[in-house]
Length: 395
Image 1 (cartoon, rainbow, N blue to C red):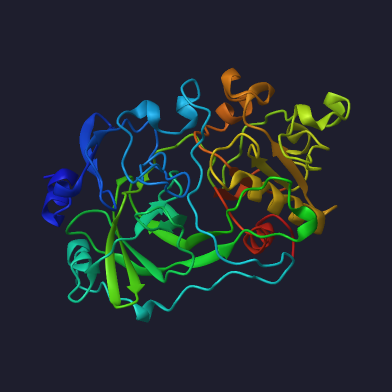
Image 2: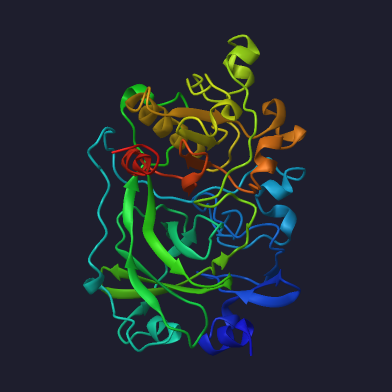
């Protein structure tokens, strides 16, 4: 019958749907919260950007309503129409320190949430005793591959307040009758750095919710449900559908990324403001990515701290700079800005196009063999990046 039939069986089409185009066949993606009908092309990706000021849309968070047309969605595909970029919608939580200690809040135990054994995704959603949650689950990534994936998201009230202390588990299924994966509890990862690494205007984002591993075994749209531990018991919420394989051009783990040139401090005569919107500029511009690819371990960060409308571009660069100093001499860290001449009206830089990126920030960890060993879309904390460094360093 198809996914639209699956959604109808789940009882979600009366709450809103997104008509998208995938391989020429119309499908419907599940939406969370109180949503309205709209049409969205998959070229404008469904990712929450920032804490809602009212409605939560797929591409942009504004007053808990979806954009009326694709031109309102923030994505790299819509650069000519908007200066905004898809990134992450996250809450505020801990004021942790950097270094090797993890200031994040660990995930609750899976046993604290309903088992999905023998259940459909619809039955999980309708768990007896679970109230309908009024919290909004805002997915914070769009590029998912077949296999294991990191799944980040934010949690907000319908009034737009960031929720920083929710206990949440997610459930996924590839159809209304397919086997359910879950519960998958989420940790709350801190974005804080040591004071010396905080830029003048890094934004107020402090955390991101992360399910470290979701295994998608096929391409296409999946169904998703969230279960939360509310003050009066369990609460259930629908979650926008992830679409696996939506961005096949983005280099995956194990692949060789394109050899692109990245501007260095020497290229601009030391005037880092020409190639870095952070204030003050970071120090990740000493080498050209094309020169080190396949020779040395490298961390390539695509982000624009001053021009990104989400709240995480600045914190991501702050985190990367702190970790870069910790691993000085062991790996090359390279920060690549997003817009030509740091001007949104000039379009995105060719380096992002070469990587097939339609969202930012992105971070790629590349081994000395020239292959991607890890990649992170959106926000992460110091501890998460430190841990990811193990994928490209010996020992």
